[in-house]
Image (cartoon, rainbow, N blue to C red):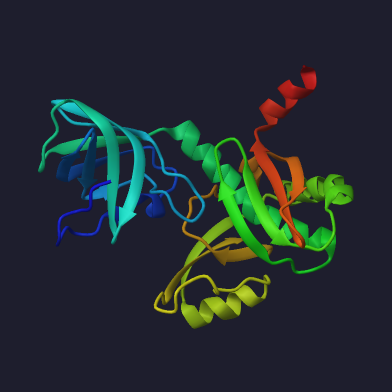
Length: 263
């Protein structure tokens, strides 16, 4: 990925204004070719750049004379860089374009990301202890959490899945708020979370909260209500070494669950 030119303005992040935005209009600020790739910078974007355990969006940027298929998106000093392996036709700086996010992929990531927040609280409820989450990753097909726990979760998996889906059924709102660091630290104590991994210079903290159930600092995209998750299906658990457990799970639509039962 090529770096933006010095002085390139920061990108307006439309995915924070509306995570459900599938298409958007923008102006091309810069296009640069490096080897077999093109870096496309827009003045605003709904494409989510890779970060915080969530993969980048994919999709298409179209102009009047050409289009670019976006296969990766990265953030560089506040500027979002859309990476394409080629451009069909022509795109140029100053041109008005329309971006289209690959929605099925994005929505799967939103559901799995929200499920990960919900699962963190579920694990604490079922084990009866405020487990420390030490790693996570969000994917289209599944999500995972790594956490400190001295025992095996194997015997508890049915109860964990049942409790997770009980929370889903409560149809709680998933809220996003920005707080000053001290306020965020105090708020997160209620949910056994902290800001240890965030550098001290970060003072405005984006908090994602499953209303009154779980909250943590997070820069990802999520569904608005837990009912959109559908059902949470635990795929497997395994040990990642002494005192570290991993659990993998997926948010599945109720229609997909019914099809699985019918088969």
